Each structure stands twice: as C-alpha cells, then as structure tokens.
Length: 368
Image (cartoon, rainbow, N blue to C red):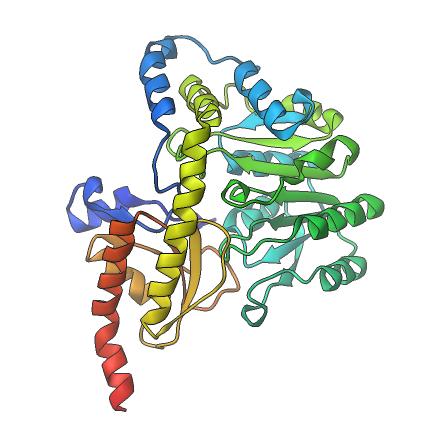
C-alpha cells in the first residue's frame, strides 16, 4: 500500500531543491507558529542526559497534569507516539467490520480501517455548507448504515470547521445508545475555545477521544499524543500498545508545555490575529475561495483551473514555500489547498508569492 500524503516533509523538499531545510517555510504542517514553549526547550536541555535511562512507563507527571486539565480520572488516559499510533491501536484492538468516515478528513483514518479490512462508508461534508457537519442528517445516515464504528475529526481537518459541543455530545449519546464505537480525533481542539469531549468518556464505554500534543505545543518531531476512554477500555488498550512508545524527552517537553500558561495564551491570540490576516489576504487575491476556520489552518479552493492545488504547490515550492494540496484528504477536488497560519512576516511572504504566481492567470482571465 502506498504511503498516504502528509504535510511537513521539509527534508524531502530541501533535497529536491538542493537547499538546507532551514531555508524552507512550511505552510503544509499545521503547527503552532510560536514554535516550542521556551519552558519546554529549557526542560529538554536540562534532561538530555536522562536519555540513558528508560522512560517512565506510567508517564506519571504528564498523566497527573492532563487529568487535572481535563478534570478526569488519570486511569482513563493512554499515551502514545503521537495521535496516529493511537488511532491505529484503537482500530486494531476493536477491528470493526463496518465503519463510517466523515470526509474530507485525515488520511490515516481510512488507512487504519483498511489495515483491518473494514467495510467503509462515508458521510460527505459539502463545500456549499462550508464543510460543516449537519448533525441530524448524519444521525439519520448512521441509523441506515448501522456501523459498528464511526471516525470523525473535530475540529475537522482539512477545513477547520468545528462541531459545537452540544451537537457532538448528541452524536456521542446516540452512538452509545446504538452501541456504535465513536472515535473522535481532537488533535486541533486546543486552538479553539471548545471544550474537549473527554469529559464524557467516564460514563460512555463507546466513546474514545484522541488528542495530539504535537500540534498546539509544536512537538511533531518528538511524537506524543494521548487518548481518553472509559477506565476499562483505557486499561485494555494500555495492555496491548507497543512498549516504550513515548520517549523521555517527549514526556518532559509535553509536561512543561502544559504548565506554560502564558505561552498558551500567546498562541491563541497570535493564531486568531494571523488567521484573520491571512484569510483576508487570500480572499483579496480574487481567485482563492477561503472557507471559515476556527483553528491554525485554512482550506481554500483555486477558481482558476490552470492553478490547481498541485500546480500551486509546485510553483510555491520553487520559492521555498510549502503548502498542502488535496492529496491525502480524499473527496476534495484537485483545486483545493490547505495553508497553515504562521507568523506575520511568513504569512506576508506567502501572500506576496501567491500574487506573483497568480498574476499571469488573473491577467489572462480578465483579458479573455
């Protein structure tokens, strides 16, 4: 099976261009534009010598911090080597026969289901509806399909649309009643003001919530995430996950990042401000349709046929700027791109590059 397309491959881009990875500005991976927390960076530097010891298999410090943050039983938490490992763990353990995916969505959802040969149905989010989930229509679809597993992402990736907490709670209650395993990926929820669904897992054995600690806290190279589930489910999953999945430095960096409240406040303020700036700038180009987002990336559609997502990605790559085209998201047409929100200078540089890339096509369009 070919590897799914992902963002963030600055090393591959740098090799193709014959430059250093430090010369690449990466808009393809949706990571906190502030970078790693200064407190976390200092903690990693202090603890580098501890890598000669095995990591804490219980992750006690981080477990206690997250349990307090989520106001939940610490035994409902399972840590893993990023959200993706945990997704595959859940699917492998429950091995669903029939699943429903909300699409477009994270490419690994389908890949994980394919690994257990599940029959996969889809519920399509539409650009006409701003890629928002229509809850009643979705529940009607589940009644007809009768799956044993549902995978959805909230906030949605790649659109950035959010299912309101009350509505996703309604979906969780429905799945519990119908005995459908509901797996919700909340990798980007920290960029929003929405509460996590993790508060419901203690009384819902059919709900599993997957969290990333690499997106908001800018730790993708260290790989760490966690899931929350009913205590009995969490215990079962913790017994079958690969040993030593989380390394010492990842645990330390994540713990210190969670303690760094000023960093978190700065992140939310910066992302909100720069998302608005970037969104306005993209719309002013006149040939990109931009969809509403509540997170640190924007989904856009090129209205110029000759400037498909693939073409845009290739042209910008020559300028040392990397965006994400529609490959890997499934069901999105070739004109779509996903663009991460970065710092003001970086966002301005991208907008300047897009004006250069789009000018011949826009001029030709106007003259025809």
